[in-house]
Amino acid sequence: MSPFDPHSLPAPPPEIAPRLIDTHAHPTDTGDAVAHEGELGLGVVCAMASKEADQEAVEKLGEEWREGSEGKNWRIVPFFGYHPWWCHTISLSDNPPSPEEHYSSLLLPPSSHPKHAQLQSQLSQLLPYLPPPTPLPSLLSLLRQRFSNPRAHLGEVGLDRAFKLPFPREVEADTRLTGLTTPLEHQRAVLVRQIEVLMDVLPEQGVTRAISVHSVGAKAATAEVLEECQKRWCERWLRDVKVSMHSCGLGLESIKDIAKKHPNVFFGFSHCINSRSPSLLHRSILASPAHRLLPESDYPSLPLIPSLVFHIYHEIASVRSWTLDETLVRLEENWQVFSGQKEDLEVRKWVERQEVGKAGGNRRDRRAALKSGRGNVEECESESGSDGEADGQKEN
Image 1 (cartoon, one colour):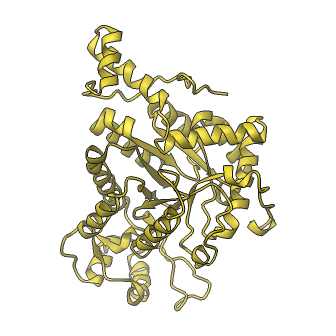
Image 2 (cartoon, rainbow, N blue to C red):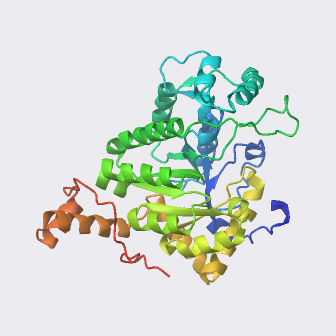
Image 3 (cartoon, helix red, strand yellow):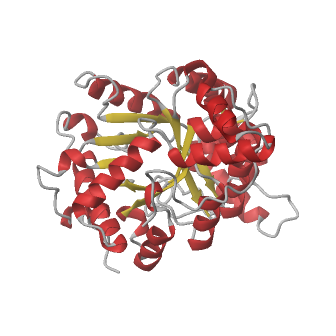
């Protein structure tokens, strides 16, 4: 495959651009987010934060674009959170140890491990360039404050078994990778604590929140987190939280399994990442429920995002045998459900089925209870048994 070159992709026509939606981008990773203010080039961009340094930048960008918008029609929707690539800089303790103690205990295997000496040498080279560990409780406190904005969501967060810490350019000009990885248990702890903060604010504000999830080499662990969240928070999790498996490379069986068990999970695809394996991308788009597909750029440069998003719209249209206009309509509806602007009829159907099955009572009475907000699922089943055809959300 030829090297990826976003500059070679055509820009969307002016009449199409305002209808395009990017559900996962990183526009604050480069300086051009500010330089091109006023020239968004598409309808909506979901701006992801990833590490401690860019939370404030995403917040500022969202506020800047909010000033020219009305009501809920924000042009840039802010997502806040801590990505697994940077969670090695986070200590789970209120009082973190010294950098050397933190990183050694977190990143090095036992001294009996055959690669211990090699990894210890690599860590010694890295240590002068690693920041002091930040206590997770303080980061969560800031995250909670940012969620006071009812349009703020959680992302980019997740799990990654494949990521290895790179040498800084001061050590290796070609940014060669070390063999150091962050244990999955640590990543999982950071992920779950962030989700807990999100769930804590839900009863206070009563609005839909979205989570953009990164999952690489961690299919089983990601599925376990989704399962535990659904069991722990039940109806509240299903009704008030939407999850996107972003730049989804989980594989066909995992997509089908998650789609069946978790009616609030969507599947995002980007040309930037998923086109590395065109065959898998096409099969994954087909394996995902049509009403849970989301378009992404997963790109850091705001001026190039419209072309990348336009391209993934074309990819989805081609694979699903839709016209471009049909694709625009369908993906806008998916976005409206994902962002809470439109009721998720599949989730409502799923919860009603669980309510009736648990209670064994009169279906009309149970529907009335759910509609009034009195209904509650004490225990959520692990499988939805969804046929993918809730009213008005039909599969194709």
